[in-house]
Length: 141
Image (cartoon, rainbow, N blue to C red):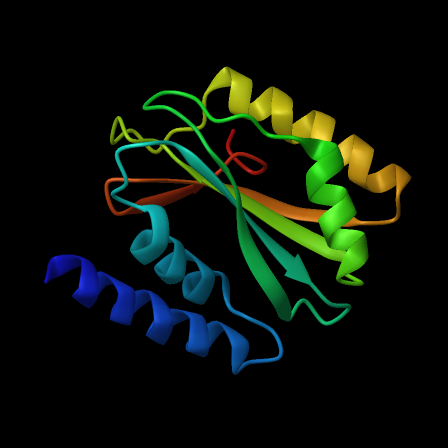
């Protein structure tokens, strides 16, 4: 029963994402909270963006363990290019409940941003979701 309700919530949030040309960060954050915010395993979601920052598509590109998920930059960027995306937002959850980006999150963000730049794709943000909160691994101090 609960999984059915969660599925309905994900579909409704997905519809809301696709009905706007440019999504507000709060719309994407709300969708992520519903999709992966309370999962027991870490997973990585990528939003593929057009030139106006509208969401073309999204995909869960990796499922991991309770404390780790593998991010394959090559796979992410191939998918972005196949969709004609000019930008991406990546996001992952922390099953621990702590939304603060780890040192590893910050390093991966820098590396992915550099790789994206070389291909003409803009990494707009890297969001970390946990316990109903969303933080940025790109813009944290």
